[in-house]
Length: 225
Figure 1 (tube, rainbow, N blue to C red):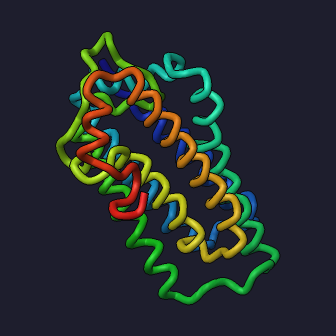
Figure 2: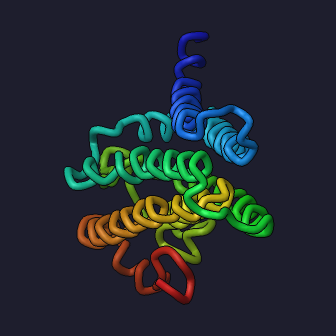
């Protein structure tokens, strides 16, 4: 029992460790308060996710099954989830360390925090609403995969990716780095590509999804796309 519980904390500890090493290793000091704010937000989001999955062992098992996705998704996931964010953190740290850019006003930092909090809450709402919220793109026939139309899925077809992209783009604002927008935008673009490919897969392979796309017309942003 205790071993099983400890295993659930491993992804959180791993994520915070990687984030800390990238941020503080690149900036060369520990008193970078922007990084501590970002770490706090990441920690809160991770704990929130863990709380949602704590009693939903079926979804937890599904999200742990990362080898079952589409072949093209195996190439995209590391970029969108790990390499892209790492590049953003390291670039921001180097920018701050060597003062490549002049930074941004305080209001930009505040806006970044607000966007990040809303993005994390939106993603959590999507996960809570969708019992098929897998970490990879696959049709879950073994779990009776069906179209989800409740929660944020009433407004956009891929709310999880909306939240992920918004958090990614808020990160340079929180870290006060103009240069960090380059990898952040590239990472968000990869997420958009994943959205297109997943949407196409669902249309072709999931019963009822094509009808759903006619009712909910937007993939990520209402009235935009």
